[in-house]
Length: 84
Image (cartoon, rainbow, N blue to C red):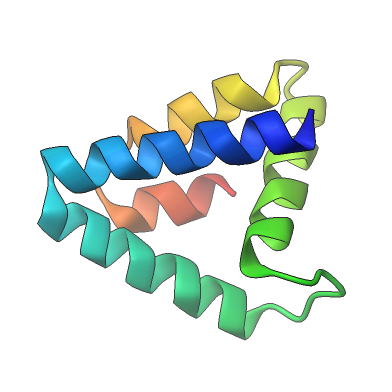
């Protein structure tokens, strides 16, 4: 399941990069800043994101893929990160 979610997240990032490279750059910066400022026992930045995605999915009683879809519907990087 984790591998599928990881692949899905990467697919959404790739789609965003093709559709809106500037937003993709801003999002990358926000993700890096968020990851650098939050202490984590995770191995990679994606591990930390995945933990938050799974937490939000459980909290909202939905699937992790629905959370990823919601994240990528946001109009800017700040909104994306606020949802996590």
